[in-house]
Image 1 (cartoon, helix red, strand yellow):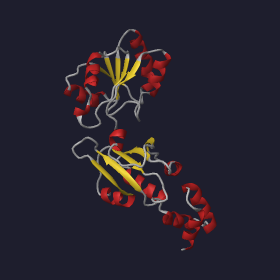
Image 2 (cartoon, helix red, strand yellow):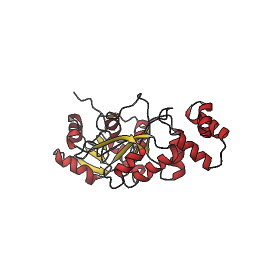
Image 3 (cartoon, one colour):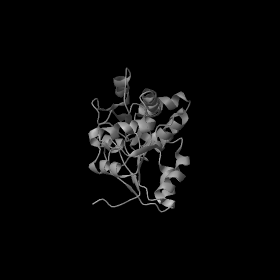
Image 4 (cartoon, one colour):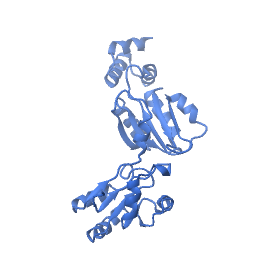
Length: 267
């Protein structure tokens, strides 16, 4: 039996429309309003499941202005569901401001389980352990992106990226961390779903001609076995660093033996 809430966070399929849950369909039919990131996109899903609930646009450009309106409706006894274009709301999608205010106003909230690109992707990607860092969409500026890549070099780093920017992003990762291993997924749950796990040079070559679809990617954490120390040494030497300085820098960043790195600098 479905417990009564006032506000529902409802995941929707990331690609394959059959991935919606029975509970999600039931809730979307029962609520008074569905708050959609894009009403046109959501309408395709609603039509598919014969759902005729009223839709209201709720996106990053009107997020603040809609909060008061929704709270008023909820206090009048209305029930509202929040959906994004695809996947789980609040994961790189609008909703944070609204949820905060609903909590402040003691509105009863619940979230349904369902589709999300991150676990869908990670369930197909082998890892040494369960630890990973998700950073949303990659920064657009080179400096911020490089800072992020370096800061999380010891963690499996998971991010979203657009097909228009992914090759540039991969080249930047290669420039910053060398020819490391990555995993890239695109078109998850759709007809042309593809997961590629390889060193970054091979992945760039595989996709350099053409890549389509929503993309989720993981940079594998640095270990002694997968750090391209030779490339790192060459990069630091080109900046004028001496062998002792390079050994100190790389041993600190990657928790490797300082003497071993020093020997590599002399080769």
